[in-house]
Amino acid sequence: MRKRLLILLPLALVALGVLFVPLDMFAVTPVTRQFKVQASQFAFDPPTLRVNRGDRVVITLEAVDVVHGLYLDEYDVNVRVEPGLSKQIEFVAEKTGKFRYRCSVSCGSLHPFMIGELVVMPNDTFARAVGLTLVAVLAALVYLWRFPPGEAWSE
Ligand SMILES: [Cu+2]
Image (cartoon, rainbow, N blue to C red; front, side, top):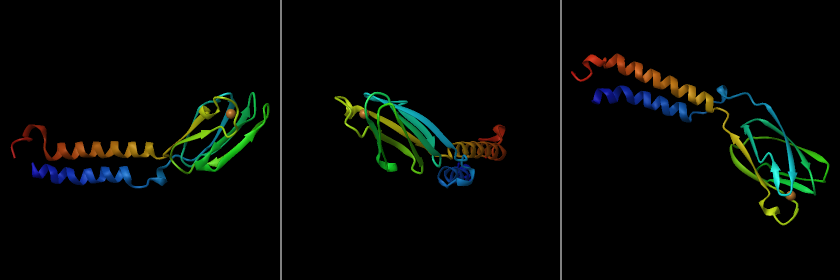
């Protein structure tokens, strides 16, 4: 049993490495993501914007009915747009996580509920998944090589 541990432990460490070591060189190439967001009483459409870390985010904000705004604290965004007009917001999504943005202009009774969400995904999820799969396959192969099924319990 100790022998098994000695063989599998290094592989477990490699798996942890794959999980936590920065994989910037395998990261998905950042792209520009364009969104057209319509603000109306009392919602943003679409309510959720999904991007990867590093992406350039271009939001065209359009006020449909009355004056609205878009306030996104973490990315220092605060714009105001007149009805019928639109405004462009641009920033690079450097922070991963879920960020709420809200209307910054008091636009009516349900104004406090006028919120949307920016979801910034880590851009190396795919690379980590591939890496972990390779480690798992390697572990299985090493295990089968050291302990062939027929004689697994005879040592
Ligand atoms: Cu509003």
